[in-house]
Length: 201
Length: 201
DNA sequence: TTGTCATCTGTCAGCCACTGCCATAAATTA
DNA sequence: TAATTTATGGCAGTGGCTGACAGATGACAA
Image (tube, rainbow over all chains, first blue to last red; front, side, top):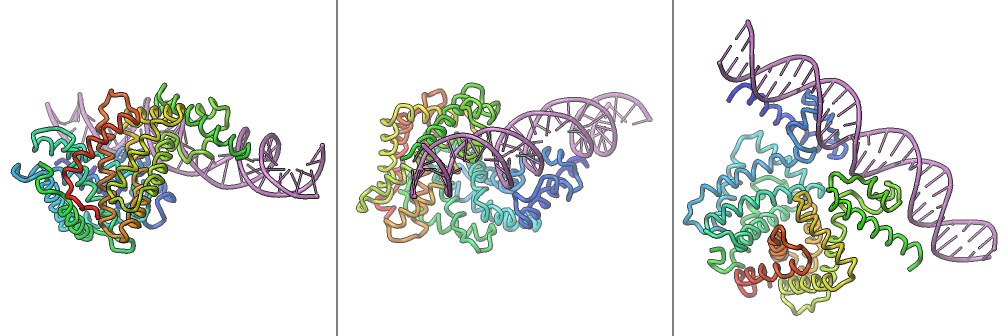
C-alpha cells in the first residue's frame, strides 16, 4: 500500500474522529462542515470528497461493520442453514469488532452513542440496513439455490432481530458492541423459540 | 369545520398533487420548492409551514396510511392474537385505501410509483415505519399485558413482512394498494408457515 | 356591521449543506 | 528527471430550510 493510500486512510479517520467529537461535544446540528474540516486542517471541499454527506460520516463505522458481516457470511460453510449462518456471522462480526483495534472500537462506541441519543439518525441507519440487506439476500439465495420470497423473508427476520436488539439497549446504558452482543443473544433466543425448525430451508 | 380549516386542507392537498406531478414529470431533484409553490400560487415559505421538508411531501400519504393502520389495530378485539390483529388491521387498512376517494387513491398510486422508482426514498419510508413501529409496540404490549422484548419482536416480524411484500412489487409492475395487498398475502403465507403456533402470545 | 383578536401568509435576509470547475501540488511511474 | 495520474484548495453558485416582521384574512363578540 503506497504513501498516497495511507495518507488518505489517515485523513478519513481523522475526519471521522473530529466529527464524532464535535457532534458529541456541541451537538450534530450545531456543528458545521467548516468546523470539522478546520480541525483536521483540510478544506471543506475535501470533506465531501471523503463523505457524500454530513450524515455519512456518522454512519461510516456502521457501514464498515456491515461489510464485515457480509464477508463473514460468505465464509460460513454451505452446509449451515441460512438463518444459522446469518446469526453466526453476526456473532463473529461483533466479536471481531469488540476485540479489534482500540481506536476503532472507541469510534464505534461514539457512533452508537450518537445514533442512540438522536432519533434523527434512525433513518440513515435504516438506509444502511436496507442496502446491506440486498447483498445478504443475494448470498442467502445463492446458498438456498433459489431466489424467491423466502430468501427475502429469512433476511428480513434476521435484520428485524438485530434491530430489536439494538433498540433494546436501554437508554442510559453504556452502549458498545459487547452490550449489543448480549442483547442480541436474548433476542435470538426469543426468535429461535418462535420459528419452526427448518423454516428457512 | 370552519372555512379556515377547509382552506388549509385544500392547500395541503394542492401542494401534494402539484409536488407529485412535478416529481413524476421532471424528476425529484430537478424540481425546486419554488416550482411547487408557484404552481399552487403560494409562497415558498408557506410550503414549509405545511411540510417539514421536501421529502415529507412525498411521504405524506404514507404517513396518513400508518395512522389508519394504528387506528384499525386499536379496533381489533382483544381476544385476537397479537400477530393476527396486526395482519388483519393491515388488510383492512389496504382495503379502505383501495376503495376510498378516487383522488386520494390516485395520490397513493403516484406516491408508490415515486418511492418504488427512486431508492432515495426507501430510507424515508423506513423512517416512517420505524416511527409507527413504536406506537404499534405500545398497543401490542397493552394487549399482551407485558412490555417486554417479545412485543418488540412480534411487531418487528410484522413490519419485516410488510417490507418484504412492498419490495416484492416487481419493477415495471403497476404499483397500487391492490397489488401490495396481493404481495402481502403471499408473504404472510410464508410467515405463517414459518412461525410456531402461539409464538406471539 | 363593526371592532378585536387569533391565525395564516408573503417578503426578506441569511445560514449552511452540497456541487461543478479549474488551477495547483503532490505522489506514482517511466 | 520528466511525464502522468490523482488528491487538494479556492471560488462561485444552487437550493433547502429558518427566523423575524408586517400585512392580510378568517373567527368571534358586542
